[in-house]
Image (cartoon, rainbow, N blue to C red):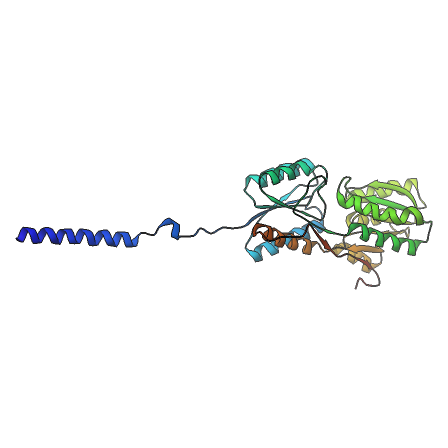
Length: 305
């Protein structure tokens, strides 16, 4: 009898311990895994204050929303941007925000991203030949028209004018050129038009060459402020009227100082933050508009303060 009681007690202890162990186990399915939204931002260059501000706006919004943002700087090199996008795809991003170096050259990379199931948002510059989920940009045509109309007003109809173009193939270059020529071809005498690749040093050297060939230039439209500021260095005190585009801090300061006549204000930080917001919407299955315009305005000495 004692042996039977001892055996029953031993069995009771075994079942009790087994029950405790079972209660302490947590099924894997009861522990939800934390998921982080992953977004890639392929930017054309960070050697330009405008795009630095755009990235800062995007990063601030990503931090606010708890999004992992991977930024790749192409350094204005289309081949490098293709590699950058390939790297971002391999990281498993869910959305690609792209600011193309070249709107045509980037198309194959965007196709690869879409084939990998990645949503794509174009910011500031369009992607040609591929349908993306959303495009966020200023009205570059309107901005250029505003700047050119200002030059006509200040220089007079028929005045000799030069155009400093941006990176050839970039949609901003195409659109700003279109807006400029829509006004200038009938109201100004465009004597020189050449690319300076959105770069300040190139803007200065190209402007020097233009002035040697056309010393009677009266006004200049530059597709961005960096080239406009470079042109001012070449112009020195010749009294030529220069209008830029982007309203960077340096450009607005030059307008206030009276050296740069005008610049077109965009909102790069808002572009960046809006792109990240739309990226989150896409991940969450929220419908986003195909195009999101960002307002522009002409900054002159009258309103720069």
